Structures are given as structure tokens and as C-alpha cells.
Amino acid sequence: MTAINEPYMEIGFWQMMKKRGGRLCALFLSEMLTASAMQGYEGQLEKAIVLTLFIPLIMSSGGNSGSQATSLLIRALAFRELEIKDARIPNGLALGAMLGLVGIVRISLWQYLGFYDYGEHWMLLALTVGAALVGIVMFGSLTGFMLPFLLQWTGFDPASASAPLVDVTGLVIYFNVASLTLRGTLL
Image (cartoon, rainbow, N blue to C red):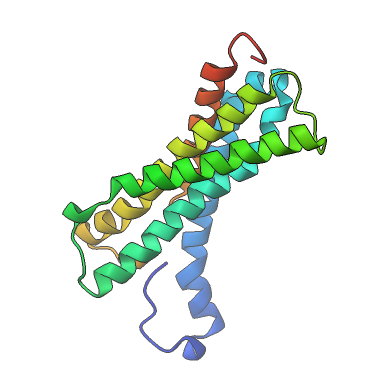
């Protein structure tokens, strides 16, 4: 989105459409890569339909970690509190491990308490979701941190950062982890 240089309530309808519409269309088109990524893993989804249950979780975790990192970074840039050398990659790893553990515990509880039967390979499914979350949140956090710097460096407004790439990459990470952990069982 292009910067708004006047009070929000003074911007007319068509001016706001111009400022936001093009960016939203570009993001929508880039999000279509998500469908392409899923089509590439259609065979896995046919064999293990249970993997589809966690796609929203996977995509939102990557996007949330990226947008959170971006918001924190843009604030820090505005107050001149940091530079690119200040990247905190271990934070993304730790946050991913935390969410991965929550995912494993949730799947385990649902299985044990009888809320849902994930099948005989539920432990491998829990491990798949947990490991994928580590990679996805780490990637989302790193992307969310780097994108505003890249935009600023290229002369664009860092506040316009958004990362549909995180959603697509999150699915690729998830399905690749599933290929490794579920090979010979569900896949």
C-alpha cells in the first residue's frame, strides 16, 4: 500500500481504493501460489487426508509470526532502535519450538481424550506438525524481520511489508516434513 500523507478521515473513497486496491490485488494473486503449492502435494493429501486438518494452523502460524516480527521491526525502525545486524534468529527458533510443543500436546490430548482419532500413526502426525511449526515460525519470523529492511533499502515504505511468500513456504515446509516423517506409514 502506498503511504497515506493526510489524515485518514480526509481521504476520499476513490483515493483509498487507489491506495489499497492495487496492493490487495497483487497480494491476492501472489496468494494463488498457495493453491499451486497444494496442487504439488495433491498425492500426499489423497493418501493422508488428515494432513489437511492442520493447513490453517500451519499457514496462520507462519503469517502471524511474520507479521508480528514486521510490526515490531517497523516500530523499532521508526524509533531508530535497531539495524539489520541486530537480527534475533534464535527468537524465531524458540517461538517455533514453543508452538511446535503446543501442537504436539494438543494432538496428543485430543487423541487420548477421544475428541478425535488421528489413526494409528498419530504420534508421527504430532511430530510432523510440531517439527513443521518450528521451521515455519522460524522462517516467518526471519522473513518478517528482513522484509522491512529490504523494502527500506530499495526505497519503498517498510510499513507496506506483507509476506504471502510465508504462507506458500509454510505449506512447502509442512509437506516436506510430512514426507520425511510419514514415509512408509501414511505416505
